[in-house]
Image (cartoon, rainbow, N blue to C red; front, side):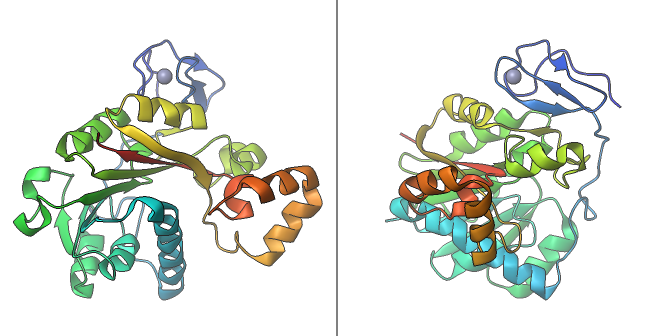
Length: 275
Ligand SMILES: [Zn+2]
């Protein structure tokens, strides 16, 4: 266990309130800080290996789900830049729709895997706007960082770095794991997303703090889920049986989301635009 930082890694106000041996909470921005973490080298795979075909199919379906949420704002977008692109499923889906598709990741085996597929430009390393290929600059761009900032000691620093690289009208999609979702509420520290790679988990309030301090305008904030099977009829019936009132309320308000997106709500997302 690391000694708890006195300052919150998100809002820098402190001190954090230690809950137990595993976690500390920030009462100012509502972040849950992981005290179980250890330094990790992402270059040779870190938390992620090249996935098998079944996993990739499922991740592509998840990527399509993200673009469905983004649909209302995508008119005129020509370039997609995925920061922390992992095994590249967002890039795969984006390649069919945007003129230029670029991914950044520090994970060497995954970058090699994306380059071999040949659908996107894959840049090995941290995000750096100066390394974007010239044909991917000067056009309306959607940036994404999905399941990235919870890995960082200073999550807001990357968001601000991306914001600084954005032009007026460019979009940023952020997605993070939440400690307020059904899985963490049920499993606590046994949840697979409570692991040493994740330095923190967010709540909708903590995610709103990110939006409010990004320098960008918030177009949307919501919750979603992509565990395999979470959008199935079986899951839907289970949610109806267990939480009938919530289910009915969700039916009227869910919009483009599935019942599981709203009622399980393990991940939070933001859609931001540069004014
Ligand atoms: Zn805080």
